Amino acid sequence: MISNEFNSTIYKDLFYKWLVAHQDDYLKDNIKMEYVEPYKRYLALSFQMDKIYGQITIWNNNIVEEEIHQKEDKKLLFYLHYTIIDLGQCIDMFNEFYDNMLKHSKIKNTTIALVCTNGLSTSVFASEIAEICELENIHLKVVSMSIDRLYDHYQKYDAIYLAPQIAYKEAEVIGYTHHEKPVYCIDATLFAIKDYRSILKNMRENL
Image 1: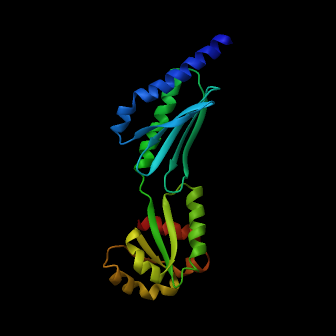
Image 2: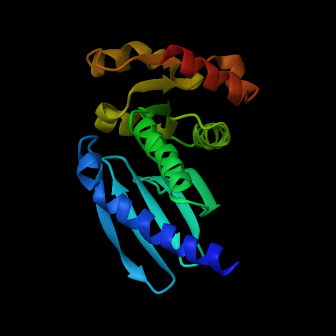
Image 3: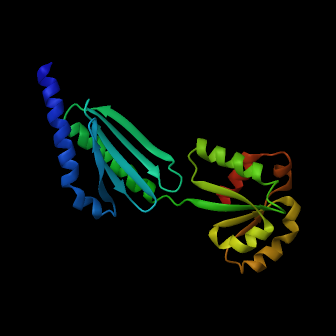
């Protein structure tokens, strides 16, 4: 029993040193390793990319936590924890963490403007669609806004969706945005019955 605890302590220290020793390799993938201020109960390292960051926390009780977050909203994208058995296990688990960092860094987060006259009637739709995207891990952000605000900020969005009550402005919006962004009209029936999933499906198909 004492031998197992001693080995776990050695593996904990070796794993931390192994992570630090490979920081030049991380840079090849545009990942910058940074030291997290040590605490008496753990050692930790962060891994920074443009849109996401990860952290490895090695606790004194030989538990390792791996987590990946989006920088914009701190959303948790990946979480894993395990008890150290040996160094090979730690390296395998780190490789899983590292592969997920690379995967999430390549995911494009699409942002859609959901537009009505004053932004009020589409706000509920934006909230409901956001909830579905969160539950199903869909990388799509929908922002509700007024037609006036759209004209000032349309460059920020990947696509524009008009609520049925302003569908008649489609040609005007296309002209104003100089065909720089795709413009769609939400199906009036789907909007009326609040079929959020079908609207989201249409959005994803169009994209």
